[in-house]
Structures are given as C-alpha cells and as structure tokens.
Image (tube, rainbow, N blue to C red; front, side, top):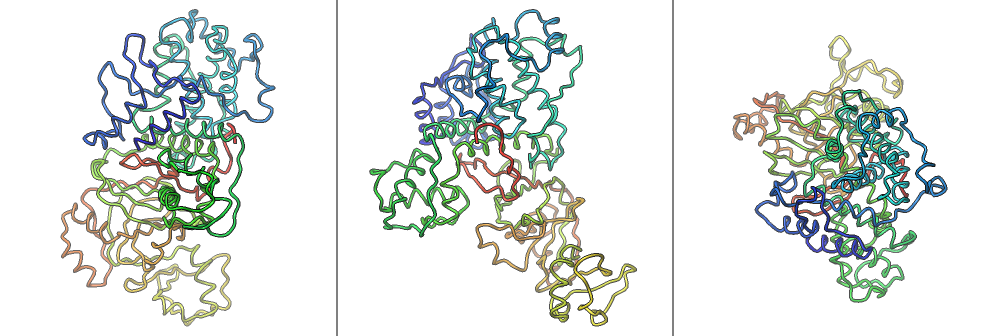
Length: 579
C-alpha cells in the first residue's frame, strides 16, 4: 500500500498538482497528505483504528488535498463546453430568491475575502466531484464544469458558488430521505430533484464558518479511509486523461505463462496503471513472463477472480474497465459507506455484515473481525434484498417452507416430469386449513406453474434439506434469512449468485457455534440437538445485528483495495461526468 500511495503522489505531481495545502485555517501547520497517510498506514498500532477514523493533534492536518482539483481539467461531456459561460454576468442563477435572501442577511461575500475562503471553495468543488461521480443529478456536474472553466479567484462568481452550495444541500436533503435499500442501491439518484427546504432563521444565522461546517457535514467524517478513496478517485481520473482514448484489449485465446501474444504489452500497461508496484523491465515484450504473471495474480485477487495468472474473459473485463468508471465506482461506494452510518444499530458490539456482490460474510465484535465466510446470494432475477435487521434465533434442523415462487418456477416443472420427486426430496404438502395432503392424490400433469398453487409445501429436516443443519432467523418482510446448505460445492465457484434470495453461509456451523456460545449454549448442547434430527428454535439472549450491504469496492483492514462486479446492475445508468 505504501508503494501505491507513493505512486499516486508521483502521478498527481506529473500534472503539477500541489499536495501540501492548508485546509484548517491560516494559522495551522500544513503537512503532506500523502506522506501522512502513508505513515499512518505503516504504524501497525493504529492501522485498525485508522479505518474507522483517527484522532489528530490540534495543529496537524489529515488532509484531503482539496486544491488538487483546481489544477486538473476534467473530460467534458459532448456539448457541455458550449453551455459554459465565461462572464459572471452571463451566469443564470438557479435559486434567485434564496440568493436574494442570503445577500440581504449577509452583504459580505461568503466565498471570497477571508482567510478560509479558498479552502471553502475547494471543499465545495470536491463535493460536486464526488456526488457527480457517484451518479448525482446532471446539474451538479454542470456546476463543476462551470467552476473548472472560470478563474475561481474572481469574486464576481459569488452567485455560481452559492447556487452550487444550495444545490448540494438540496441533494443531501434528498439523500437523507432514502431508506436503507435505496441507500445501498443508489440506482435512481440521477433523477433526484434539487428542491431545497430551508427557513429564514437558518438563513439569518448562516455565516462563513457555518458554510465550511455545512460542507464538512455533507462530506462525512474525514478519516484515513476517505483519504484513500479520494486518492484513488484522483488516480483513475489522471489515468483517464493520460490514456486519452480507451483501447480495449481484444478477446482471443487464453494467455498464460510463456504465451506469445500481441496483447501482452497492453496487458502489462494496464497492470502498471493499476498498481505502481508493477514495474516491468520491458513493457513492449510480447511474451507473458513470470513478473507479469505475478502481477496478474495480484490483480485477479483484488477483483475476486481465480488467481491463476491466466488472461481469460473475466480478467479481460477488468483489464478493460474504464479508469473513469473506477472513479465512479469508488465515489459511489464512498457515498454508500457514508449513508450506512445512518442505519447502524446501537447494539453494534457484535454484528454481521454480508457484502452481496463480494459473496462474503464478516462477523465483527466491537469492530474486530472474528471470522469471514463465503456466501451464496440471490441471482439477478431473484436478488437478495438489501436490509438491516437482527438475528434473534438459531433454528437447528429447520424445516424449509418452500417459497411460492420456487414452488411455481422450480419444483412444479420437475413434479410434472417425475411425481416421485416429492418423496425423493422429502417434501410435505398441506392445504390452507393445515391438513396434510398425500402427494399421490395430486395429478401433477394438470398443475400449472403459473397462477395460484392450492397447497403449501415444506421440506423435512435431515439429509438433503435445502437449509442444511441451521437457519439464522431475523425479522424482515421478504422472508429471507441466512442458512446452511445441502449444496456446499457451490462455494468453490468464484461468482456465487445462485440462490432465490436467501444467503447460504459456508461457515454456517461456526456461525451457529459463535451465536449459541454468546447466548450461553455449549457446543455439546448444539450437537445433541443436531443428533435428535428434530427442529429446535434456540432464542438468542442478545440479538445480533445483520446488515446486507452492497459494496462493489472497499479497502480491507490492511489498506488493500478490492473491486467486484455490480451483479444487480444498480449502476447501469452512468453518472453524467465523463463516461
């Protein structure tokens, strides 16, 4: 990671960007933000704390290099340049009445003429960039493009900055109205209306200091993780500019060690862009050498692929991933992390995080990772819902009450071909009065897989039960849960979106042991219940929060950055900033 930060530092300076800035006021000491981040990461005593935020001395700056933005030129959307104005008097104010009220209460400039004004404008510029990349409304990126096109030290542009600030506030107000699932998906924020609700007392009390604090609040906690995200966002925007145009690596035969292929130099170039540590003696060598294979394996690991050092279709997908789209992905996930904080439950000493696109579950105790497990999640057509709840019970030897969708789409077609499938899979049928119905009484050839099915179906506990030995129950409107499985072979797959919405946990036995232990039950007690083969609901004395989250990029505990495919296609509508 230290080499990665150094590489970002070098690449930004290649554009004559200043990394040493003062964000906290004229009397406070500045420091090199990249060096400080690097030193913090290397300090093993606080590296874990740094992920959730670190304390800094009064005169130091855990900076974000906001002035980096003013020296970069962003790729423009076609036709945007013609919409920009070069004279302040030609700018069309979006919020004229609010602007008049602000001028009435604050005749002095909010954006110019005081020591911290430049820092405030820089922070506004950063927020426009982050929200635009994350998929916010087009107006945000229009303001960003306009600010990038002007001399931003000219006080005549006061109205532009005030408009952009009010627009950011309006966007944040709308974000605060999103529910949990919407905050994780972020799949419709492009159309968010920028209607702002503020009252006269707020306007009357607005001050220059409040302005900076409001922007800081929109930004979220300034910690080492946010710094890492911002560095990577800038890095990939820089790569996009340096690359000029996107040249995809063509599909073709697999490329492995000692393969000779005209695509190898371009593969090596992409690996060097991805990680500054990938230094190759000869970029133009058309033979896949050992150094390239080693770098490729690291690249594959960071993208959740099989680290075999072979270039196939999945590896090509990520090698061809546009740099600007990596910036968008990072900004989107940074916003998800910020919004998630609103939904964190108070009983968070222990919690379970299931990252759906990563096919991974993490059990945390007081922010310390206890263990991780592979999971299987819902396929795109039957997506796992994004929700937050609390595990209240562990069900040992559970019945599987088959959801009606699965009965209609999966089971009935099999029963029409082979009615004995009911007995083979140990299913039971009941009418809606709760009376058992023998399967041999049903003419399955006449049962349709559409419309109403007149019976409830469940599978008895034991061998072959789809839920395996454990079900982890938490209240939710979708009737989903975590559970064991009778198909453990699926955990060997890299892409594991196979279920009908519930989450299958590879380490289900260990999860059950952990939950039952903290509730006061012994391993021997658990084993006795399993041996009986009968369903048993075991309530937990303390509910454990469970979060089904959706992070397609994240930093691990050691600072390593990971990317995953957007398996539910939430980001299918690109943000308006440079695609």
